Image 1 (cartoon, rainbow, N blue to C red):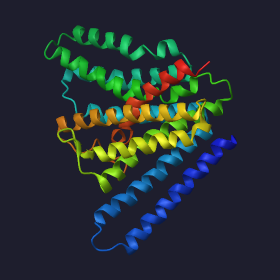
Image 2 (image 1 turned 180 degrees about the horizontal axis):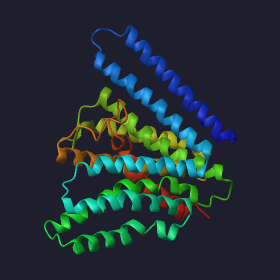
Image 3 (image 1 turned 60 degrees about the horizontal axis):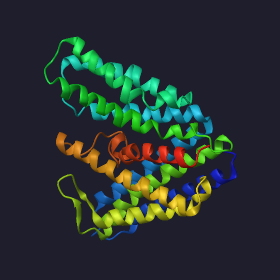
Length: 313
């Protein structure tokens, strides 16, 4: 937090949120009757939630690496709880779910905190996948065996394994102090979330052509292009937070935004299959934890491994 570049970034973020709050207040006070009051209330609720999210991220950064690991572990906990509630489970699956919450989640994030990359990278997709299958077979319940094991394993990959790649950015050797890693984490989080926000804004203002009617009817091609353009531009402008050149930062931002968009579609498909609008209500104006961090799930491992392969020492 004492890093001048990181401090400058946080001042910009707080200034932007302050301006957004003032704009939302003035719209609510002076907007014409044609403007939906429900839309304005939703906007104010979203901004208030963003204040809370930014405050929590700042606090975790102040605490340091452990604070950030605990923050993302908490995100994984609530995301896993939301997604698990949508899958079809049998009584014999309960032990697998308890194992997931009390063992898999803390061990995965402990590996991140320990910087044990070799085990962190394979723990869930190799060891846990094997344990779940053997555990289920040992229980003697053969009905819907593959569906049951695959559903639980996919929940763990989606909500824990993918998400844990975000704080894993702190384990990379970037030839500098830990503040360089924190700046990279803020860069990644910002470009992914800006892609989400600007896709929503461009879609509301200019959207005419649905991106995918069956999976996500509210997303539009115009929103997609606007979001990708904005996140790429922000990546270019914030390259000073990263070990990348300006062009590399823009490309990494674009790749992350594309991966994040794919993640949003996947999580929307899960909701459509379950027949629900949101994953939960924990974040007012946004829905559940997974409604807000769906794009981060898919973008985090892509961003982490590209950074580790091409830019880490």
